[in-house]
Length: 119
Image 1: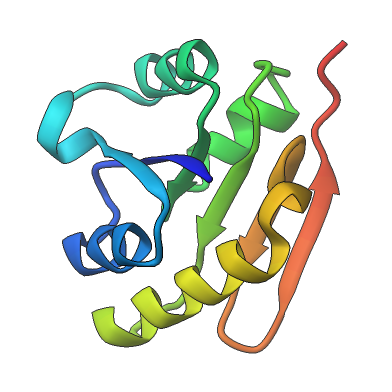
Image 2 (image 1 turned 135 degrees about the horizontal axis):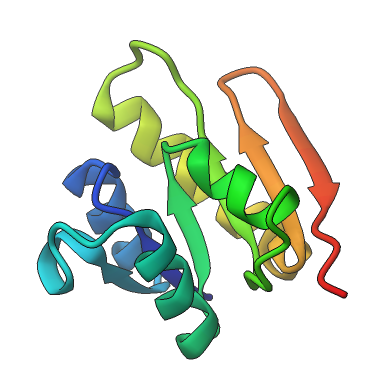
């Protein structure tokens, strides 16, 4: 799966997703300091699902209706980076293409999803 990990994602999450075989572009490595809108435009241009801990991407997708391929918000509170990485790999592996066209909020014990209206 083609993913775009936002700058706020822990490096351990990015490394785990890459080890699981996903094509992950990491903003911290390639576009450090880019604002959310610039990252969103990059995701659209490269057809990558955004993985982030920033609810601002949900706003861009739902309220502003930017045509994002998908957004996965990792909302884990104070969990360790190892737990975050494990859960991220699990969700991307289990849900795969179902993440496309959706805003997915991943918590430790539940996952919430809604369609992104891109009309």
